Length: 334
Image (cartoon, rainbow, N blue to C red; front, top):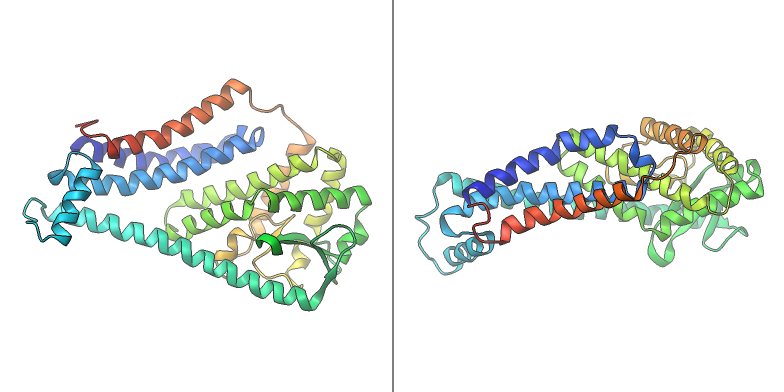
């Protein structure tokens, strides 16, 4: 397993630094946001697997020819008091680091979930006091606020889309439909789960610049996915105007008492991801995302050609399969 650990370490470094930077600068994700979203998820999963796997494989190298065999030997040392003399200082250090990193990632994921759920609960309590049901659609509520605001609050059967009366006064009926379709797409496609995972990744490894790049990219991609669904029934001009109107009210939305950081706004795509980061705002990222969305709608480009999409999907499968095979197949790299 000697070469396996080094290969996994190199793969982890590549997926943690140059690959996300190059992908964040690429132009093609706007043409095929779903494919790009899969690639970002794969990079995160394969990178984490390679990072932890490299340390585990190196630590277990003296006691097994693959990860499973090494873990069986380690279990014997821990639970059956078998001799540990085969493990040197650096092997024990690597195993301890892998265990601590794994625990840190899991703990941060759960803590972020807890914070988001707590904020959503408080948000629902405020909505119960300050909002009223809307006649424009089921599970839609209206708050009294002059700024044009729209966002969705996930929660399974309790999910709601929230609009301000300022927004409803500013939009034409077709523009309002576009907003509702956009927000309902966030809920139906469970975008909040993606935002939760990438927010937790960023909180767990804040020193890694690519966690910020990944979170910003995912925030932008989910907005594009929701825009594409809205375009199936509404025109580009309608959607562009709706985006512009909602974005114009994003600054004023902060003053609304029912708009804590838990929102996933039509004009503030980073807010839900930032729910796990108290005090964070979507300011600059939200403006950049709005600009990219409008530019994408004003100057539409054809989707990524099918052969290229399949190539990206193949790369996703390869990125997940390679570290997994290296971990469980005996002596694959020696």
